[in-house]
Amino acid sequence: MNNPEFHDVVFEMHGKQIYAHKVILAARSQYFAAMFSSEMVEAKQNILSITDDISVEVFLLVVSTEFYCHRFHLWAITYRNFVRLSLSTPIRFQTL
Image (tube, rainbow, N blue to C red; front, side):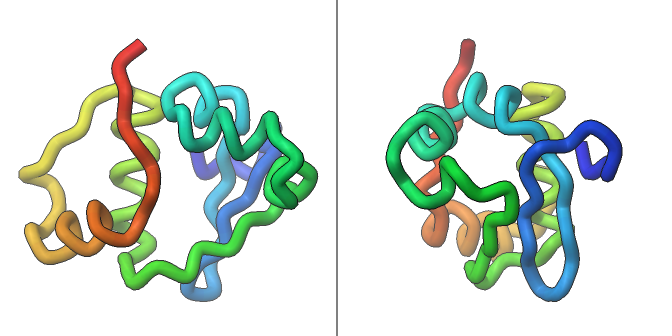
């Protein structure tokens, strides 16, 4: 996660780039699975812009722990940022 080597998707937010892997995101999220396997424009792009009002740090924490480590620690982020994230994103977490 967030390593420029071997990535196949980049999230751009607040002027920063976050590197990830479509197969991992799709395996952990029905939202990403649908996005990457459909006719949506995001399926053909490797750079996705995130305009939500969440911090890069919160986005990294959620993606790296939930999608890559499959552990989500609510204590590690502020309540305010968690509420923003949960209200602003259509990502639905799931257990494999």
